Length: 437
Image (cartoon, rainbow, N blue to C red; front, side, top):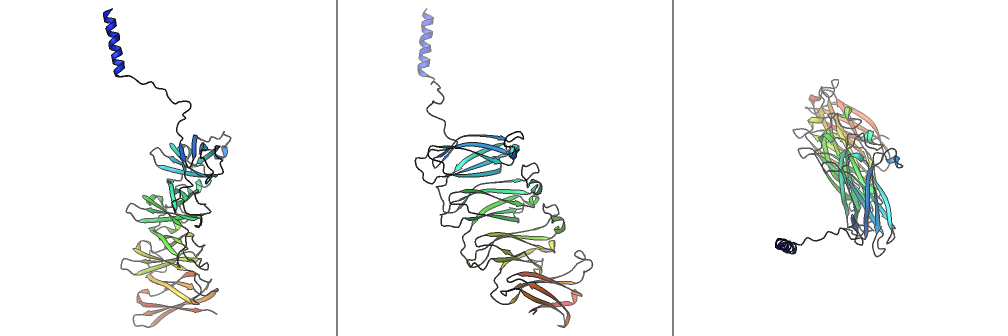
């Protein structure tokens, strides 16, 4: 009896010193915290699954469908906008897909069900959704999220078969600018090789993204096998200058394995790409071309080329490129822009280059001197231009003369090339430009 009484006293003493609290779980009147909350909007639930062929939503089969319920728990109707962002991660934790939705006019106290789709479907190991404020404005365009991946044939995308193997770089951007700023933004991506050299650039532009709203932007790289790292940034549509702006450039030798229809034909050529912006306030200056000069190991300009002429509005950007056939012989280059100003009333010679043609370039023309000039029509109307090339030997004697007739639109540039026999005997060449009336 005494032992039982002593055991009871010891048990009471232990429980008093080390009292174990009771686990009650969530109270019925205290719901779990929201998945995301911004500006009074909250994600109260979400569910994701890959769309199957037998689903009612079979038009999106293979995509990851995330269905959410968003509730407006704010106490006022101020800026009745919310943005939703969804990020898809692979098994290694890399963001490989992003999407965004913006919604307006969800009344206070009401809920809204919506769905967001991500292309990669079963390749997405995990996903994350969150809300982005439409009220918190930084005064500039913002990059909210970004993703990159190789496009695969299995993607449920109508362009997958064409883009398969290319590197897709995506971004979710937000217009954080005041409402009187142009609703125009450009997404720029630069691809670098293992040596830190920029070998490919690309850009895309979007308009009419209202203040506080988000949007998805993307670009594709055609030489992914050479790209080690990618740098991305945004360029606004504000115009403040008098000249076109060369935003960025890249260069590389074209590989025949590149994912471009012309890669086999262009293999071995020296390719220069550029992202250019129309930063000219005058509405009339909406024409521009890219001029590239290629220099050999001695610093001699051996080839020049020009891109297509672009005609884009103020604040917009364009992707331009130039191919130079001298390929590996080109060690450095210079890139510049020539606008479409046609008020000078002249035929202009912008730049020239020359080199001896080797057997590897053209067996039939080997030994000839190839001379190229970039010519611009700076008249306000279309002109026929006679371009003549005069070649002189080391004694200063004229030994060859050739001419070509060109038709140039107002403000346009073009490259014209001559081949002169006896290349090693030629010391100097001279271009003569006249209007062919």
